Length: 411
Ligand code: PLP
Image (cartoon, rainbow, N blue to C red):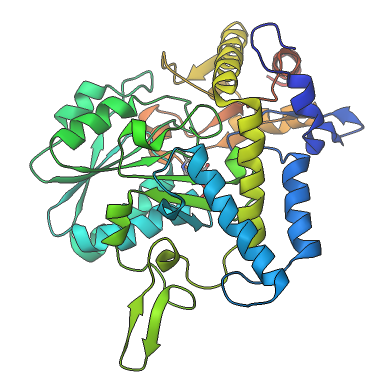
């Protein structure tokens, strides 16, 4: 049991087989790249394997037993996700390939109908590209305009400044909950409330929030939210767009094909009900089933326990890095979670990352698909250490030791 929290990191680590990998001359591997992708629990791997081995059939289409088992497992995973984020019903959960596809779906299905020339979409300066580029593409088609809420020099976002950025033309506020590049936690509840009081639609990029804290769709008050399976211990290639059912009812299809229709003739077609209206073609059935298993795994550990553990580990990580000579933190927001970016004076971030890897420490380097955040912090990129509920103090100590060694030998 970790001293600072109520979660059993030893038991959690035992459930994550990839953490026991050894790398580079049999060194133990210290995984500090959780913000890119979480490791996969054995129960998730087993759930996907059960689908592949026992009922690898298509959903919603056939009458035979295997197809009905696949359909039941797929729809039951939808129910798991709905319960996990406290959605009003499973029908509010649309399975996508990930956050990126979820936001593209929302931009195309909601945005293309509801945004026109001069309408403003408000985002923050610390978005992932997935919550920037879809709106730029939409702007080319509809003439809508992207407006940016600046962040402070420490990478935090001032909710009052966000509110002040709302104009008469703002039609959508689409913001990240937690920045993948800087670790900033945005006060989304306050910003959503300010937008809602003016009747503005809100969407949250919750990709980095769902693995670290309790996400309650109804309590947070937003209209839509996107997240990825692989960032919450589920498989790759699966993610979710959640939206209030009234919104989904008014949205047009994202892609056309099988299963998203009620009827098709050469004269025209009619659409299925949500969520199936937005899931054209054969979905990632195994991925959805794996995501359901990931949700159950997280629920067993408990999201409140995870949140306090991750907060304790994040603050230990910040503290350790702040005491290493020549290490400069990039982004120092007071409210942060999971990810810490830094650079080493006179060393390139890619070199630091590569040298840490030789010590068995897995971190990410570069712009983290958040180039505007890097520009705002006046850097070309950073080294990013990011953690999850499996991280313990020994991991952080290993990073501390390896980084000091890298700086001593190569810096
Ligand atoms: N938004 C945030 C905040 C992210 O961290 C990421 C991935 O790093 C994405 C969106 C895109 O997620 P995906 O690549 O799973 O679609």
